Length: 235
Image 1 (cartoon, rainbow, N blue to C red):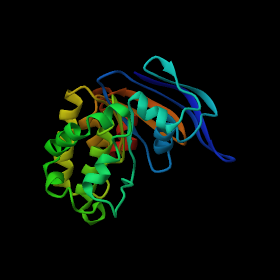
Image 2: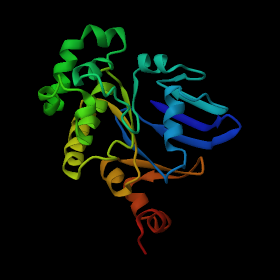
Image 3: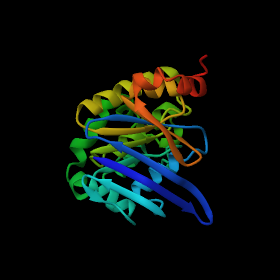
Image 4: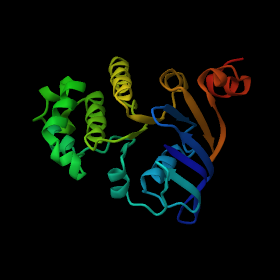
C-alpha cells in the first residue's frame, strides 16, 4: 500500500532525512520508532505532502507521490493525526470533527460518519458542544483521531498519539484503534514508547539521524540483542 525508498528531505539548508525506507502493506499495523529528532515526524510529513522529497521515491496504492499536496493526499485516502493534536481550541468538538470531512464523499456522509465517531468515542457525544480547548488531554486526542477518521482514510498515520494522555485513556484509545484496524484501516504509528508500540504493531522500523537503521517483525526485534540493549534497556 505504501512504500518509501531512500527518501531524503531538506528543511532549507538543513537535511532532516538522509535515507529512510519503509513499507506498509494493506491491513498492517506498523510502528516507526526512534528518539526525539530522529526524523519520525518528518517522515510522516513527507508522506502527507508537507515536505517535498529531495531524493528517493514514495509510492502509495501503486502510484508515485512526488510534490503532492496535503489536499491530494487526503483525497487519496491518507490521514494524519499530528503530534500535539493541533485542534481548534475555540471551536466545539462537533466543529473540530466536522473539519475532518474534507473530501466530497466525507461531506456527503457527514451525519452518518459523525455518529460513527460518537460510537467509537462516546465521551465526545456528551461533549460535542463544548470547546475543544476545554477538554482533557485524552479527550482532545480522541477528537484528533476522530477528525482524521472523518475523512474516511484507508491509511491512518499517528504521530505520538499518547503524549499527555492518562494511562487508562491510552488503553481505551488503543482498543479503539484496534477495532478501527479490524474495520480495514491500515496504520503507521510513530511512538517513543517501544513496549507500547510493539504491543500494538506487527512490524517496526527504527530511524536514527534521518536514516532507517533497523526493521523487522515484532518477535524478531524483541529477540535481537542489539535492539534490546539499545531500545529496551535490557542486558
